Image 1 (cartoon, rainbow, N blue to C red):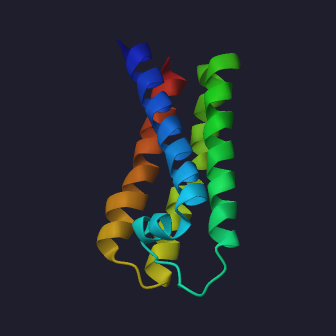
Image 2 (image 1 turned 60 degrees about the vertical axis):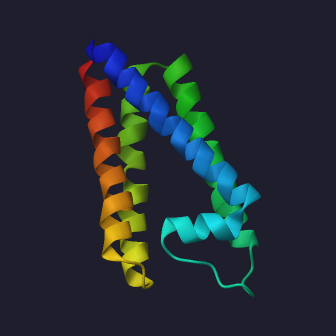
Image 3 (image 1 turned 135 degrees about the vertical axis):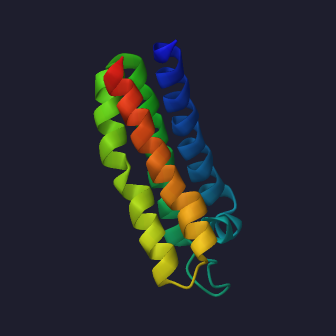
Length: 123
């Protein structure tokens, strides 16, 4: 049961990152608003697309690690990747986003990623 839960949560988080990346590639301004810091209309969308490419790559890499290197490698990946939503929390707060988005989305995601890492280490 623990193995199914660990792998299921990891796959769900990996697919979520892949989805977020794809959204930043396809609808960058809408994705930025969902992130918690809306992009300026006259701003350069290239930076939003860069985020999309990086998130998409992280999602693919995470799925590849899980499939080809196993739970241990994915656990270490999740442990280090948890820094991203922690940093996102600070970015949202620093740039005028709401505490609800900063903590309810980004910080909660960091906690969930750390839980995923812990479950993967346990299998």
